[in-house]
Length: 518
Image (cartoon, rainbow, N blue to C red):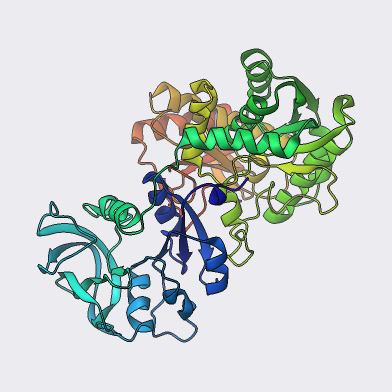
């Protein structure tokens, strides 16, 4: 059962902006369901989705560049309220008969927005005449299309907010979706609720209720198995499906040999004793190491792990020969990063549960979380009554340490990384930062460096420490860990982990990097 069929839907048209996913999340924070679509979407396809509103995202290109993304002009004639943000605002102006020019200088970061006094539907009477907004542009709207008025300006964007009340088409040059823009979320709420008339009934309680019904309708009286990875996503998916079909569900925890130290024991304890779910524990480490032998390319590793994962289920592990459905904790970011629901988005990395499944898989997929972002999954877990130990478990990739080891994955290299990773997590927990950091882990690089230990030359491997904060895994910022904590982790790793003689700290955000190294 699609959320779009049960709730008012807002389409976020992606023009290549790094913030398209953030816009979608902000819409959902306003209790309205959102869906990201490609700028290649046609007016007919938009009509078929029957959205209550459309938001055009920003983008990295100029509207003047050859091949710059555009919107099907017929979309403007559908009568659906439209809000353009940054590039989306400029595109509206250009496509509807206005002009966009190159500015004498760019406008990036904080700027002061001043309202013109023209009647505005985007801003209420309580909006201050001036407030701070977040800008990121060089081009600007120089001449308005017919029927538009200017309701706000900045020093370098004289037409920073444009409105056409008759057509319900609006454009803002700044980014209301970022927290730095004062009143940005209120503007989005006004557009969604007051202008577009969205009901605002998208809540986690409604998600749980609807997905339980959807699972019951999909599964009927058939047997279901859930492949547990040890992470939050599969745990919440299992709990939701168990709420829907009870004893029809059997969880199969495949110990790939690629888990964090002590993780397998924790998973078995949690699900068997805490949740009362039937759990089969399969020790398949040797098979995964054999499958990964000689493979170094990241995508090939992900696909190999994902395929073997599914094959183990198809062998009817534990005597489950009548299972018809396979539950997976696939999330909305997994779909987006793997190329999007329509296959038109850029592939950032194929996820084991999206791009890595074999084409001839006999089990039908049940993916109750595929419409949700990570922060929403945690809220669903809480709504289901799961303990904080489960809901707030650090995110862990389905392929496990296989994508935190650069190069070939071997039992020896996994053991090295498990030891280093355990130290990182222990020290962060001891420092009282576990709940403040969204994800922290170690990476084992496929390089060697010269070191000196006990007056002797060493030629060992470096370990990379990575810690990031995020809400949904679509964007992330590196954590400014205290120097003394980094020093403690470095000293322990180089002293206690054989073969490691150097520790470095990754200070790359997402974008431009990804959270995982592979």
